[in-house]
Amino acid sequence: MTAILKVDTIQDTSGNNIINESSDTITIGASGDTTNIVGTLQNNGAALALGSLTMADNWRLTSDASFDSTKTDLTANLEQVDTTGQGTIGSAMTVSSGIFTFPSTGIYLVTAILSASKSGNSRYVEVHINVTTNNSSYATVAQGTDSINQTDSGSTKCNPIAQTLIDVTNTTNVKVKFSCQAYASCAAAGATNENRTCFTFIRLGDT
Amino acid sequence: MKIELVLRSYVWETHRMTDREYLNRALSLMHNGQWFGWRKTNDDGNVIPNDQRMTYENVIVHNSSITKPTEAEVNAKIQEIKDAETKKINDKASANAKLKALGLTDDEIEALK
Image (cartoon, rainbow over all chains, first blue to last red; front, side):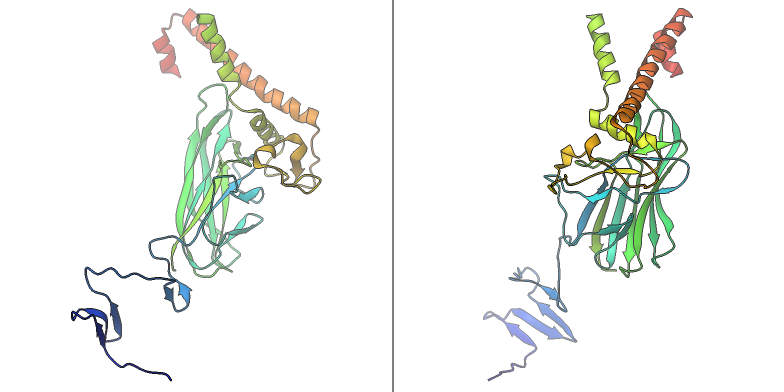
C-alpha cells in the first residue's frame, strides 16, 4: 500500500526543522547542522560533484617539430599522458589530426604550453589556441608569446603559454586546435615520457 | 685546478642534450613540420615503454613524400649540430681573447653581451 504524508515541515523531537518546503523551495537542515549525503547526489539524474572536478585531461607532443614564420597547426604526434605517476580525471578529450573534441558540454579551462628551442635568436615565438564553433572555421582566442635570445653555444629555450576558457555549448561544433609560429625557425620540443609541449583541459562547470 | 675547471666547463657546454634529444632535434631539423613520430608498439605488437620509444629504430614517417633517412644520415645531422655548438664555444672564446687583447676588462666584455 502506498502512503502519502502531506506536510510542509519535518522536525526533530526538539522542534528544529529537518526538512521544510516553502514557495517551491525545499530546505534541508538548518544553519549549523551537518547534512550527510550517503550515496550519489543527483541533478535530474546526473551526478553532482560538489567541490571536486569531474574532468581534467592532459596531452603532450611526443616528437620535436620544426616550425617557422608560417602559422603551423600541430596535427600529429599527440598523446594523452601515460607515464607512471601521471593521471587524468573523468572522460578524456579525443583528437583527430590535431583537432580536439570535448567529452561533454561545459566551461573548460584550456592551457597550451609550448617548449620551443633554437640555436640562434627568434624575436618572437608564439603558441595559439584556436577554436571553432561551427566545426569548420577557426579563430585564435589565446596567444602566448616569448622570445629566444641565445645565451651560449647550445640551444636556448623558451616557454610561451596560452590560456583561455572555452564555452563548449555543443561538442560537435565547438572544438580546439593548437598552432605555433616564430620569427625564425624553431623546434617545438616533444617527448614520449615527459611533458614538454603540452595541453591541459579542465572542465570547470556547466555552460 | 684551472685546467680542470676549464675542461668541466667544456664538457658542460658540449653535452647539454641527451642522445635521444639530439636524435629528436636532428630529425626535426631534416624537414619542416611534423613529418616523423615514434612507434608505440614493436613488431610483435608489444607496447614499447615510454622511455624507450625515442630511438632510430622506432622512427615512423607520417609524410608519404618523405623517405626515412638512414641512420648514417641522422648521425651526420647530429654531428652537424654538435659541431655547430662546438664552433660557437670556440668563437666565443676567440672573441673574448681578442677583446682582452684590445684592452677590455672582463666587466666591459660582459657588458657587451
